[in-house]
Length: 529
Image (tube, rainbow, N blue to C red; front, top):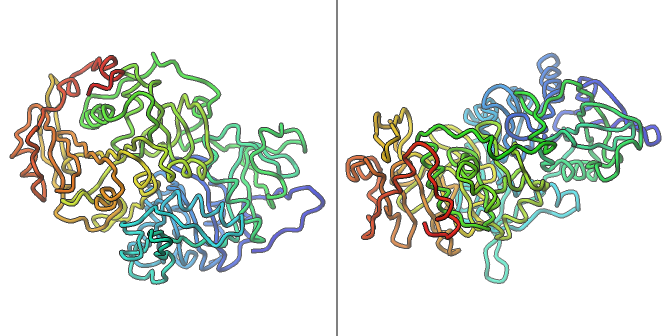
């Protein structure tokens, strides 16, 4: 890493290719960004890829990326999946950039998965000169060094995470990783490097990362849409002070997301609730509707990516979207999040936090309820979302959110792989059963520990399109079954373990399976579900 010399307070403006020429073999590079293009410094990523393809330099980089970034294809971090360029990657989520995950699966790079929130907090600790952080997040999971210690493949051997005991209580110690270079993004930057994010969707951990790199004597490279005169950005709008920025790269074509820009996502406009487009009545909406019944007026919750991400939209359909507050780990507070690869882009947010601050709230127990998805669930209530069927997905904020929430609602279909259902007239029919078990005898990896949740006194609910379960000291208990299904044939026989059947087994509310608005406003406000 070679830092350009500053001329007074002026920041150097370069082409993307000139900027990435400053990166040396063996550097540790942090890349900020999330989802389907949120603050994605794509010009810098593409330029680094092009340099390596042409020159085979720089080699043996360590990549640090706290959140999943990409389109689950060739964008995001995937261009950096070049043999010889990357030696090690430490990521919060991998599935958004599958080319990098494929290298890890083939043991071509060392690969670690740290919880997203821990990574966001670690860059802040690194900026402050701390050796790392102690956290309860990850105890009992694959991150715990008594299990895999966050390692994702066989070639990854170095133990980074340590188990420690302080005053009789267990903690995990996560070390701060010195960062040499970072790619960050803003909207507007002045000629002294002071930058604002007015068109961006979230702040992520951009400021903390820039501080960590700068204080380590490293190189901060900022991509921005425009450069303006020094001092012309209002100081309250400046997110990144100019003294942190070494190089600016301008991309006037920069968009908020891969599919373009929308000022609703940047909070400039507010959508009318009456304009909400109802979700299609299918198995995903069934899960979102039933999950909505697990939150109460006034609650603060989190909604994760996957099958649960329609909860905000369903709440708006039912006229209760403003009766509680859903947050997203990337920073939005309130509103409704986009779905799929664009998760994290919210409309009608009430506030926007930095990502480290959002995770402080989560880790400290601020959430009343969390809605997350599961890939595998076993008889002990353990859940796996980060690595299954040989594929590396990563945890994202899952581990943090589960560890700190008073109630954890885990959502998914009962089976996967070609599952087809027909929903309507107050019931659900299984037209074609899924090929793969999701309810397994024992999870191959543990992203959520049922044992740890019970120790912490958390309430745990599992919601599928045809059944609802809860976790008790005795095991996983079937508490509700959907109208239209055979309990033995369609539920128990489709599971890899036999659940305990509740003596008070109920039928799921028929309104969940009916077209139109459910009409649950009054019951919701009374908390009578």
